[in-house]
Structure formats: structure tokens, C-alpha cells
Length: 62
Image (cartoon, rainbow, N blue to C red; front, top):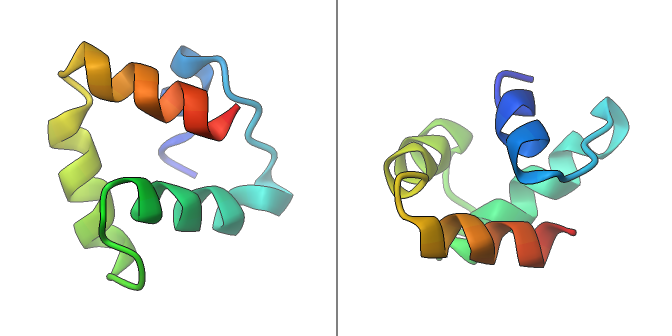
């Protein structure tokens, strides 16, 4: 999973077996539930520059 580095940076445990659950949760956090994974990660990658978003992501995934 290419996003594994993001999870590591945030301090979020991300084993391969729960990758789908994490992806769904992230889509929900950014308001894109049910959207294509590539679109969601495109949005997330833009938002990762915002420290508030990073904190929100960390809080909701931990």
C-alpha cells in the first residue's frame, strides 16, 4: 500500500489486513465515501499539507 508511509508518519498502525477499512474511513473523513480510491487519495494528498487535517486524520484513525 503506497499510503503506508503516510500512516507511519501519523503514527497510525496500518497492517495490510485492515487496509480496506482504513481506506473507507479516510474516504468518510474527507467526505468522499463510496468514491473511487484514486480520487480519494488525490484529495487526501492535497490535504496532507494542512497540519489541522493531519491532526484530524491521526485522531480519527488512531
